[in-house]
Image (cartoon, rainbow, N blue to C red; front, side, top):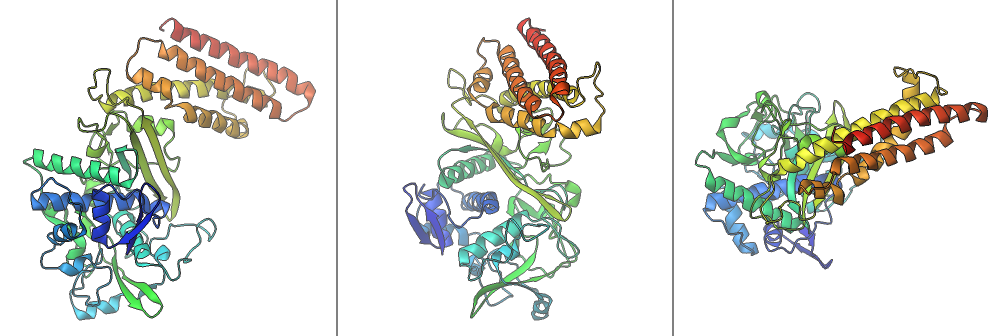
Length: 496
């Protein structure tokens, strides 16, 4: 049973098919059992399956009843009704996100016992600190389901025999999500994305069909599936896992493989994932860094000279006029470690349309973000020079290659960037996006100057040294900052 919460906070429970019905009917506001790193994989899983089911059934209408969804989804696996059950004792048959074995002897390869769902999709951490390991004893079916979805559709390479998914740029990369979402809960995001994918499929005669649900295909771990034989929206698996019920509850058994499930390493993530931003040259999917989605990273993602937006990150005439957001999310993984779960929601208060109500191209948002991010970088450079001068004691000419000084000013530079990040997408940003006649460039530089000045003042009070040394250092470094910022703002005022 899966639990979901409606907009009024009431909790409902039902089958997988009932959960799809609740999403389609607008009743599922959230899924309380989802852990933070499960959220995007679950959204993608439900959207991909629903879109393929509608396309396969040649209908554009989302049904709202449990029975209708049962018919729709089992229509994808007419000869394999077991494919939607979480635990299937007959391993020659598929279970949900669990491939069948080819021969009875294959079962012996499943030697790795996994007692809890958090051990199944456990984040790679150096120590048992922030996220406790194997703590979900007596877990429910939905806990195992969400862990399976996350493992099978987002996991990377984790040593010999443990290959990652095809929908990312390499085994140590991440499956990133970038999309436009309506605000207001899981159901609205689900319905918007399903409708866009179905409409896109109807509009393209060249759309590639093929195997849709990779867990329905037997796998002994020795053969990969050809990418060209898969449906564009395929839901993949990357590991050989089977669940079984014991007197103590469910547990997982896992086996290694000699190859990845999908032969797509040469594609470097260019797999038509509807949420995956691609490098502008089309060579690879974008992999975010552990820095997450600060204003500079968001500006890069929205820059058409650097990134090609995925289908679900493009504004559509059918989108709501208000209440939209740009959402970027990724569990960033490195070699043998996890570098953080990052998510950024940028609300777009009506600014995805111009004054006449016509949709604005999202690259207009990217253009403004890019300019503002560059201005933020220029302001940070000026602040950095002043702070280096401050910690060096206010010399006539600061040594800008002083690594020790750079380390000392890191906390203040972080403070500056965090402050800028907190206001970057505020109202003035959207006023510039909609192209009013104000001098937004000067206004933004003035704001950055004020933030830099405030940051410098805090640093000057906290900088080490005796009062005899601090006063002249503060005066000289402060004068440097004032002069450079004044000149910089005046350039914008005069249109230079």
